[in-house]
Length: 521
Picture 1 (cartoon, rainbow, N blue to C red):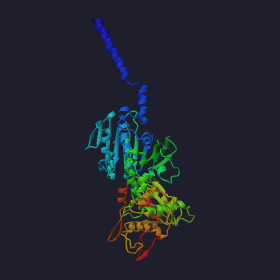
Picture 2 (cartoon, rainbow, N blue to C red; picture 1 turned 90 degrees about the horizontal axis):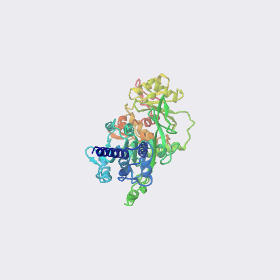
Picture 3 (spheres, one colour; picture 1 turned 135 degrees about the vertical axis):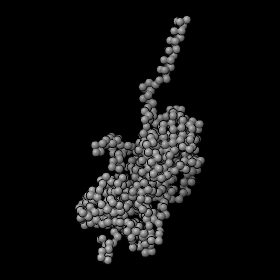
Picture 4 (cartoon, rainbow, N blue to C red; picture 1 turned 90 degrees about the vertical axis):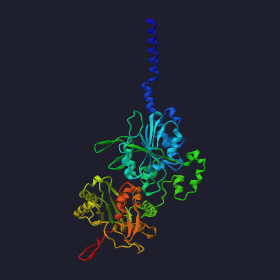
C-alpha cells in the first residue's frame, strides 16, 4: 500500500509540474506579449469586441505617435477609434469632451460604448466609468466645461487620454491634462489621441498651430499624413527637432515627443456613407460645408456677432504679408505687450508703415523685471532712440518696463487703456468707453478692406486667434471692449501677440500740461 501511495504522490507531483509548466509563460512569451502591447495588438478575446476599419482608422490605431490627431471631417470613425483603442489596446483610459452632456444621446459615446461592450463590463452612469472590462480595463469619461475644470484631473494618471472634438478645448486644458499621461504597467504603451473637425471659432485655432506641419499651409517644412515629427517644449514654446534623440537644454536632457495627423473622411466609413449622410453635409452652408464635408482647415469660421475684428479681414492682411517683401523704409513704430509672469509672452511688434514685421516673442522668464524688459526693447530697435515705442502700462510689469525704457532714453510712450477717450469712430456716430476700446476699434477700421490702408501682418495662427478674440458691446459711454482677463479666461491664454500688434498702431491719450493738450508724437 505504501508503494502504491508513493507512486500516486509521485504521479500527482508530475502532473502538477506539467500543469505549471504549461501555464507559466516563458521569458520569450512575456517578451512577445509586451511587443504585442507596444504595437497596440490586443488578445483575441478582446479583439472580438471591436476592430478598426481598413484605411485611415487602421493607420491611426497602429500609429506610433505619442500624440495623434485624427479626423478632419465628420463620419470618418473618430469617436469609434477612441472607444476601440480604450477597449482593446489600453488599460486605464479617459475620454474627454468639453461638456458631459455631449456624451449623451442616441449617437453619443455612452450609447456607442454600450453597443460595443455589451455585457462585457459594468457602466457606472453616476461616475461615467466603465469597469470590469476584459483584461481588467477601465474607461472614464471626463469633461472640462470651464478652464479651471482641468484642475479636477490633476494627478490623474491614464495610459490613454483622448480628446474628442479637440478644437472645442482650450490649449491650456489640453497641455495641463496630458501632463499625467503615464502607467506603471510593464509593457503598456501610453499615448494621447485627439479627434476633431476643423475649428469653427477663433478659440480653436491653436490646434492648427500645434499640428502646424500638417495643418498650417505656411509651415516651412510640411509633413505628410501619418508622418512622425518630434517636438520639445522649452521655455513654454514648442520646437521641432530632427528625431527622437534627447535634446540638451540648460544642462537638462529632454526627450522629444512625437506627433502626427491622419486625415479621415466620410468616404473612409462605408457603413455611414451608405446612410446618405453625405447629402446632409453637401447641403450645409459655407464655410461649414467645406470645413465638415472636406475637412478643410484653411477656410475661415463664422464670426461671433460681437467680434471686434472680422476673421476674414485678418486673413486678408496675412495674405498681403505673404505676397510682399519686407519694406526698406525706416522703422515707424513699435508696439510692446509686456509679460505678466506665468505663460504670458513678452511680445514686440515692429511696424514699417503699414507692414508689421515678424513678431519678436520672449517667454516671461526673459523679462522678470522692468530692467530686463527694457533691455529686450532696446535690442529690438537696435538702440534707435527716435523710434516711438508704445508700451502697455496697465499693471506693475508694464509700468516698470516703461520707466526703465525711459531711463535708457528710448522714445517710450505709455499706453493706458483705462484712460478716457474723446475720439469717435469713422462714422462719427459712436464714441469709445476708454482708450482700450478706441485702439481696438481703430485697428479694425485700418483692416477694413475699404479703408485702402492695405495693412500686412505676419501669418501667425496664434496672432489670428488673438486679434479675433475680443468682443465688444455698446454702452451709453460708447463702444466697450471686454477686459483682457475675460479674453484670457475664454481662450485659455493671454492674447499678447494681438495686443502688441494693436499697440504698434495705437496713439497714447493726450496729456494735459498747464491747461494745454500735448500729443505724444
